[in-house]
Every structure is written in C-alpha cells, then in structure tokens.
Length: 235
Image 1 (cartoon, rainbow, N blue to C red):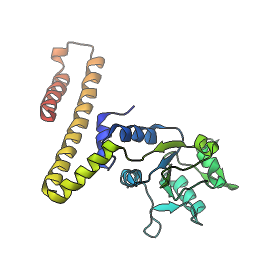
Image 2 (cartoon, rainbow, N blue to C red):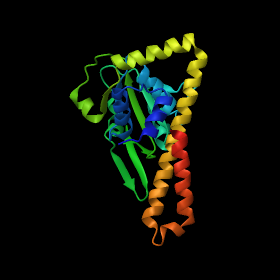
Image 3 (cartoon, rainbow, N blue to C red):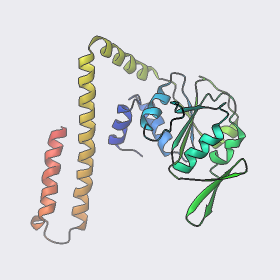
C-alpha cells in the first residue's frame, strides 16, 4: 500500500520508524474516513504538523483548532473551500454534531463542482481537503457511532518506538554532530531510493512499449545505464 520512499519521507517528517507507527501512517493516509488519533505523547501531532506544513492555514499564528473554538465553523469552511488541512485538537468524549456531514462525507454534486451542507450552509468542497481529530487521552471512551464515522488509530508509543526515540535524544545531546550527519545521510539515501524507483518505472515503461530491436533503442540503453549507476550509488 506504500513504497519505501514514502515511508522514508514520513520518518524524516518525524514519524517513528517502528512497524506499528508505519502501519498507523498507512491508515492515516489511505483510509476512507478522516482519522481520529489517540496521541498521549504528541508524536502523531508532531508528524501531522510536519507532513501538512504547506497545507495548514494559520489564524493569528495558530495552526491547530481546539474543538471548543467558537469559530470552528468558519475555519472549517475556509479549509473545505480552499483544499486545506484542518487539525482539531482537544477531543475528549464527543465531537460536535455539526461536523457529522463532513465526517460522513455527504457530498452534493452539481455539474463539475462538489458541495456540502454544514449547519444549513452550503459550502464549496475541494477534494484536497483533509481533517484530523486528535485526543491526548490515553484510553478514551468514544461511542461506537463516532468510531464508525472516523478511522480510529492508536498512536500510543510502543516499547521499541520509545527505545529509538530515547536513543535519538541521547545522541542529539551527547553527539549532536553525529546526529546531524545521520539525518543528512538518511535524507540522501531516501532521495536516492526514490530516484531509483522512478528509474525502474521508466525502464519498465520503455521495455513494455518497445516494438523493435532492444539493442538499437538508444533511449532504453541510456535509461538502463542510469538505473545501473543509480543502483550502485544507492548501495
């Protein structure tokens, strides 16, 4: 459901590298319903803010919207209409029923446009819109109806994830230069891996579309040479 290059991007954005966190990342990005995240340690929120950095609007310097915010409807309308991401924090037991049409994705199509009715107000709907609900409660007691309208994901840190995070903190404190070098290497390796994947896809495309003599296809030979060189570089 996801390639290694995307997982590398997530890790660079702050998602822990343990398997459970990776599975949670897949659920967040691939599920049909908007995610409701259990996040006692704040790791999910940190990752979401980094991942959605270019899509989070700012209201007086604040990018997070408390569920109790009196202007949540106005902020919701702005994000829906402009295809921005909305991060709602402070979820405890219930979510305002006003958001039900959005959570249930009750779209109304008119010609090529999409709309959604929220509190008797018809709003333009941009498909790029994304919404996240985050609770800091370690063991929330949400109604089954709410869980059915969202993708319920537990980001509580695992033992392995905690070990890796603490190791990173120790290295950052004791040997900051090593930590910075490690981050640079990881970024370069991830970038090279994604480049190799693109070259592999290009090579397969050339092979499947070729109808003549492969040895006379100069572009195919060039792609093959680039793929071989990039593979050696990544290794």
